[in-house]
Length: 215
Image (cartoon, rainbow, N blue to C red; front, side, top):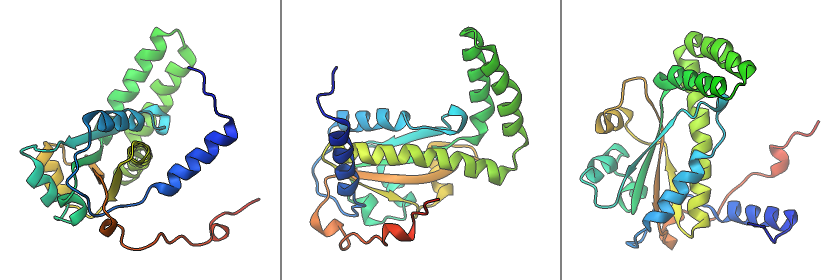
């Protein structure tokens, strides 16, 4: 399908989308269509990840799920969770990195790309095996956070709102989903139709010049 817009128009549209996305902490009772959620998950799954190991899992507590109350409690019952239409937990799986690296080896061997297969077999497997647990978890969480960002932008593009939540109980989350002890609970994201009271004030950003260092 041909895109009729120019690169400048696409860039402006994306900047407007990024500007429109806010962390909304209270939602209306309006439902979020299932296809909106599934489209956002597809976008999240396209996020970049270190060595393309895609170390994420998306645990979606759907509207009306029997796990809903436990999910809200795991988010410390904050309004962003309790008033949401949908609730998603983004989980990192460092325990699956070796399997993902092996799958990459098999993929590239089947494609006849022996150089890349060797890279995964030797270098990536070595890094996964020998990384300190805290370094490995941080490595995984950075990739999961990239998927989270794409998910929230996709939700906003569909006309709905979201809120990332790091204030949660990781042990309750692991117990709720039967996750291993070394799974990282990167964040939860609530989704719904935001209401004006859900914005706790105007957006505040320090000047870009305070953060942008040009060399």
